[in-house]
Length: 141
Image (cartoon, rainbow, N blue to C red):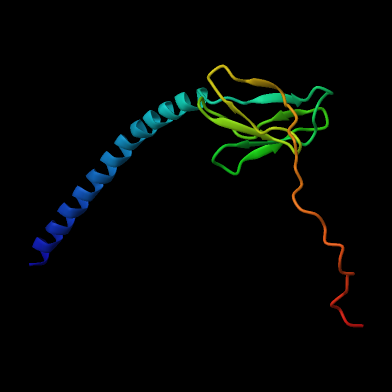
């Protein structure tokens, strides 16, 4: 009886060994195919740089955000920026700065440098401060 059980165990182990060897042989070819497809997608992504200014000169501190995400950058003291994420064709960058109109730039396959001149926008301050009552601290000494 014991020899019959040992034969079954040996047969099962040999089947498992064949399955493991077949998996190891087939897996590297699949992984190489995946890398080739990924490399093609990376080649289509662009590093976008640029300069933002107005009529008077460069604008430091302009916010640049990728539309639909929380990824962004800001211009330096010379109005220059480099976006921190690789962008694909069809992505939209939103440029905003207090006192200027918000502008959107759509990235295409040839966009690597953006030279943007922002136009000023009117800012309305709504309301007035209430000066009827003197200020009282709620803190007790």
